[in-house]
Length: 501
Ligand SMILES: [Zn+2]
Image (cartoon, rainbow, N blue to C red):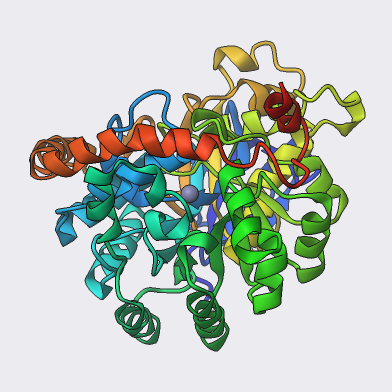
């Protein structure tokens, strides 16, 4: 049974090459059945959707986010580096009940849809340890929002104080014993939960799939990483981790492993085509080659990298080596939002700051490909990220009367460099309209807002002591990490100049 046909008529359709042409889309069973010249014949009972004065683009795909960050919007201070953020991280997800976890993911999904994103890879953390109910709550939120997602519990068996050798010694004695006594979720318990989640996945895998997210290699023991890779292979699911996001991670990794981060992961047998790495900023040419040879994909997060001052990822080099790169927003508490349009634009603009020859820059067409088909490969969804027959009907309708489209000359450039999400008029996911004319049709956003404000007050109060002690130690951690890596192995790119000067 084919089911009822839907036809989107009158729109300007952006093709995978970035060209826009007046075409109609025929949708059957949630997929694009055909893209034809305007006015082609359809069955009498077909549902007609007008896309008059709209640019139709594939839904953007967010290759790296953390839904737990949405409930912490506004809680991360200005001038906070990655390790300073991670130091306070414990406080940010404490005291949450299952419904808080659902709420945070629902808020995140609502923002992504509003801003033209139809699928994401979510590394979601729970404190003090992952739970089947928690992972399920996050997946439920995406299901209810009508969005596609890969949901990975973010896991580790070390605290940041155990992960970074020398860090505890750098703390004053009064603080040291407290932070030395902290421990991560027990190894066996974490795997027990993950095995349970994977064996009992209750969601339609066409929409929502499970994965594993060993958070940061340094925060995981070797055995933990090996077991993650083994479990992922057993269940044929993706794995995502944060790689060399900060200079401190790269230099401390070299000290701890006597090897580069990528070299160490390769030795462990961790790298494969099912692995994606977020950030990958502080990696050298040899590591880029190794990632390429292993088929590892990269999630590039320019907005978060700028917000936390992490650095500039060598994306052009990755692409030249044949690595698949996607674009991500990272969490709403490290990039202050889930705007894939913004992340995509920044990914292109950031490629220009080194002053390389213009033909090395990442073009509008190229970056749009990364934010759609590149990210889709990071998620492991084969049929999303482009408007073409056989692909899922994940379609974003942009208003062409928005200022940056007037006058209309180059839809692709005007969209990639000018769009901020405000032109999103309609969002269709799997043939179902989930957002139209300013209104999310799947979730009650005013109720979400009310509940979010209530939760923020309650959680801030419950976590006040942890926030206060986290803030006190964050500065010390920031200073410690900033001092790492200014000597020793050759630093990538221009940061060596900063350190020398
Ligand atoms: Zn992240």
